[in-house]
Length: 178
Ligand code: HEC
Image (cartoon, rainbow, N blue to C red; front, side, top):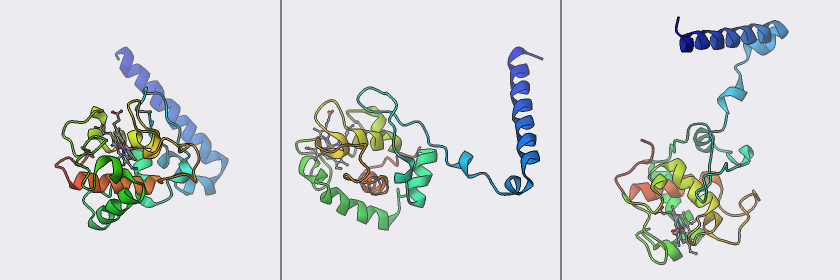
């Protein structure tokens, strides 16, 4: 057995043993599916410097937001209702003022790609991070420099932002979920 294979075997053995341990502790708990493992947040990073971006998990409070939190996929892409709402939210948070009514660019850049200032914005996870925490070159967190991204009561919510992104994607060939 190669070293990597052996390590893998050891890992699996550990997982197996810890699983048995839990089962032994309480048969009731073992019967209920584990929520904790399903709800593990993906690693978000800031667009400014790639450092870990901590977002309160409680803010992901809709099925689509929860799915995004654990997979980075935006299930609103292609959903007509979400797209229509996203367009309104884009206006509500004044994204329009800098990016134009059709997100083709004004003071700020166009958002439809395929070339982005931040190449990661071709993915929905990347675009989410860029809007959530801002950029170095002229856009503050959540689109407005004055907002504190750590204050959950301030500004756009994850669910709203996913709808905005679904609208932006509807204007381009990119889905961001590839
Ligand atoms: C005050 C003007 C302003 C507002 C309001 C604003 N932005 Fe921006 N935005 C900018 C500028 C300027 C940039 C370019 C930043 C840079 O180059 O670092 C940018 C960049 C971006 C990018 C990255 C584009 C790329 O090519 O990588 C996205 C996505 C984005 N904005 C989305 C939004 C959304 C969504 C909102 C509303 C919630 C918003 N912006 C509100 C000015 C603004």
